[in-house]
View 1 (cartoon, rainbow, N blue to C red):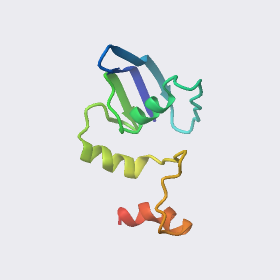
View 2 (cartoon, helix red, strand yellow):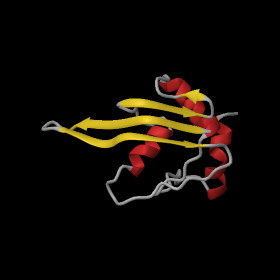
View 3 (cartoon, rainbow, N blue to C red):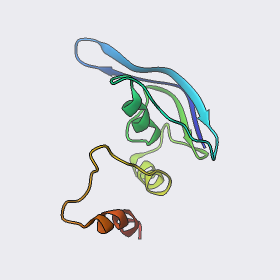
View 4 (tube, helix red, strand yellow):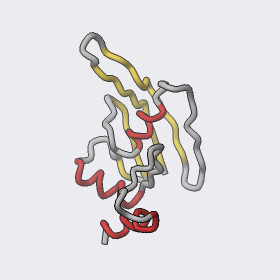
Length: 112
């Protein structure tokens, strides 16, 4: 279901390059559960952002449910996220003017 091959993510902070992820590879078959754990600042959120297509790897390849998302355009990534990925944000990301039920139903409403 998810294949990550030699993924790296680096950023240039102006003074130097910072390697956030270096050569990450793993596979998660359909039906298997994976926990991503580590110390603060170890790259967990960066990896999750890459897996969801919210960020772009500096190198390597990510395949999600048979689709290589490495070079997908943003519109295709948005459709993939809407159909294949669920998010539970630490800060909830709820629409304050909606009820809890309306917030839950909002994604279904957006995709028709």
